Structure formats: C-alpha cells, structure tokens
Image (cartoon, rainbow, N blue to C red; front, side):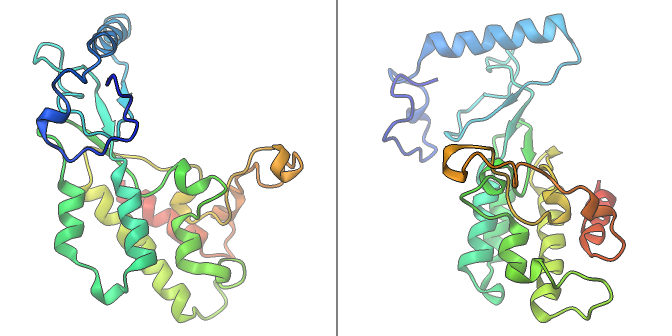
Length: 226
C-alpha cells in the first residue's frame, strides 16, 4: 500500500502518513478490485487484512471509499499483553491504558482481537502460558496437586486476559492452535537449525481432554466466553 513498503518508517497515526505521494495507488486499487471480485463471486466470503500501519478505511466498503476488507487483525494486542506479563508487575498494571489499547481502533472498521498467534507460538518466542507458568507448565498443572502461587496466578491471568480481549478487543475473536487452553511449548517446523526434527511440529490436543490436567479448565473457560 506504500511505495516505501514500510521500510524504516514508523507510523504515528497521522493521516499525512497514509494519504500522499507515498501511497501506492496501484496496490491499493488492486486490493479494492480483489475484494470486489471476491464478494461478487462468493457473497458470504470474509476477507481479513493483516496491516501494522493502521491504514484508515482499510475495512470500509468500496462504496464508502474504503479498500473493502471485512475485518482487520488487531495485531498490536498480543504485544501489549506480553509487555504487561513480562515487564510490568501485576499490581502496577494500568487498567486505563489496557482498556484504551483494547478499544483503540478505527471507527466503523471491524477488528479481530486475539491474545496470541504465530508470533508467540512459533519457536523463538513464548506463548502466554509459557510466560505465566514457566517451568511449572510441565509438572504443576495436575489437578490432584495443590496449585502453587505461580500456577494460581497463571490460571487467573490466562482467563482474565482472554476475557478482556474477547469483550473489548474487537468485533471478532481469534484462537490459535491450542493456545486457548495453554498448550505448552512452541511450534517448530523441520529445518536445518533443528536437524530437520518433527518433534515440535505438533499440537497435543489430547492435553485439553486429559482430566488429570488443568488444560481442560482453561479450554472450557475460553469456550464458555464464546
């Protein structure tokens, strides 16, 4: 959408950053045509924009002068939550700033809210559950075992973060490959760096249904919210 492709550019939200000589008119018109074609061929289709610049009118209709996507991803939300969990002590969380971040979106443009996605689940980062439970994710989530302070806190925040995000973050909600029930570990596809191993190229869905573990409690809470 931009002739500079976003390289070495930091967007502050000013409209001059979106509408000017830096706008790639051909690229924008292509997206408008693509959305028009998709919705004419398949009226029930849903198109979702992945954009970190905050382009205005991205999810407004073509008739309104927009680009025509149905939803945009709330890509800033996972980073906000990771910052809260990792860098800020619980008692110092600023709820005003959190609510502002969750509700700060373009007028009449629908947003898909989510707590985490591939950026947190793929090797190189950590999921919220890994940040919250730490090493206790491997031995502290048995139901017949008294919860430690860390597990108790992790269970509570895992639920609260999702409840706030689902209710305030947008017009739709996204889960990602088991993160909704606190899946441990990460996803790592076979590559030279892991000796082409398939060990982490998996999701252990059975954890959610294991009545000896607490993963099912997190999953049930997430499901109930929906």
